[in-house]
Structure formats: C-alpha cells, structure tokens
Image (tube, rainbow, N blue to C red; front, side, top):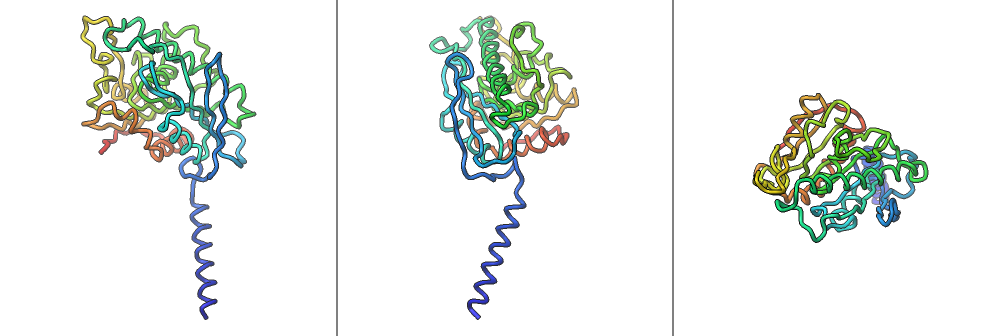
Length: 301
C-alpha cells in the first residue's frame, strides 16, 4: 500500500513538473540553465561580451544590445549589474551583447562646464560605437544565431542616452556620417536616459519604447529640461528630452511605449532598473516581438 501511494506521489510530481515546464514561455520565463559567454572585438580595440543560451535549437533569436552608464567617462560592460542583467535575459532565450565604447569624457567631466558642442559630439561618438557594434553583429547573424530584424537596444544613464540617440537621431544633422544599420531597430529600453532633440522622433524613427525614470533625477531630466539642469548662461546648457517628453512624443505618433516612473526617485533608476528583468522581458516579448499595442504610464513604488 505504501509503495502504491509513493508511486502515485512520484507520478503527480512528474506531472506537475511537466505542466510547469510546458507552461513556461520563451522570452518571458527562464528556460535555459547554462549560458555561454564569449568576448569579441568589434572595432579597433573595442570589445563586446556575447551571451547566449547553450543547447538552444532556435537559429534566429532576438538580440539585446546593452550599453552601460558612467557619464561617458567610466563604467564597464562587465560590471556586476550589467553581467547579471545579461545572464538573466539570456536565461530567457535572448542573445545579449554588452559593449564597451569610447569613454571620451574620461578625466574631463560632463557637467555644466562642458561646452554644449562637446556634449553633442560625445553623444555622436557614442552612437557611432553603438552602430559599429550592431553592424558587426548583424554581419555575423547566422554564426551567432541572431535575427537582425529583432534588435533591441538597452542602455543605462549615459548608455541610455547613447541608445536613444542611436534610435531616434538617425536624421539629425549632427549625426550624419554614422553608418546606421540597414534594418530598423525593433525597440529600445532606457534606464534614466534622454534624447538630444525630441522633434527628431518621427514616424520614420519611432519604435516601441520602455522607459524607466525618477521624476527627481538631478542629472538627466525627466521631462524636457537642460542636461544636468545647467543655467542658461553656462557653457554646458543643452536642452534634452527625458523619458516623459519621449513618451508624450510617442503618444502623439501612436507608437507603443510604457513609462515606468518614480515620483520620488532620482538618478538611482539608472541602476535600479537592471533588476526589473521580468518587466523588461514581458515588454519585449509582448509589445516588441508580438506587436501588442500599448501606451501606458505606470507609477513605481
């Protein structure tokens, strides 16, 4: 009798495990236990770390390209937050690339004493590096098992500015000469970022966008305001469009977006958002990959 009940219990456990396993959804749930990581040089001495699930049978996976923060002066592609984010997203079935880029403001600062023309040039050079990395990966799409039509840019702080500008400033006069990818980006995810000029978000450049931002951010504006809130008389005075301004522009263009905002939050959301992988993966799966239309503003607690 005991053996009979034991066998039945084992059967129920196996059945439950089978149900849970098959109830999981790729790109939203963690399906892969082992992640492979390899380092590639994509331009000059610039490198990227490529994360992908091992033993994956899918040949064309969405690619997430991550750009770290640090004021264009510091930061690394393989810091703990970046590395954990990449691994968690790869566990869900994505291919993920975390890139290094030129830290052109290292030892120089990027505040109100930095002339606005140098700030624009900094944004441009970061976008050049992002575009180079994307083109490098695109050329190796078959080898790496990625779909060039499903590339999503993700960035934090300065990295968020880099990806937002790369997506939306394609036709800005200061960004001419950049070899932008042929394929339109599938979407963009920003952790406390801003764009150089809100008017360049048009029907030609708009893509589904996920935004995280604290309303009290004193470095990168939440709405349309000066970078670092510099006085109009300072050399570094430069109006940027933050997350709220981007969301409003996308609303006008009938493009999908989700704005996750913290009424009392500051620039910490450049780091805090790295832990929101479930939200990020859900947005990418449902809105970017499956095409579900959404325009939402969600308060973060």
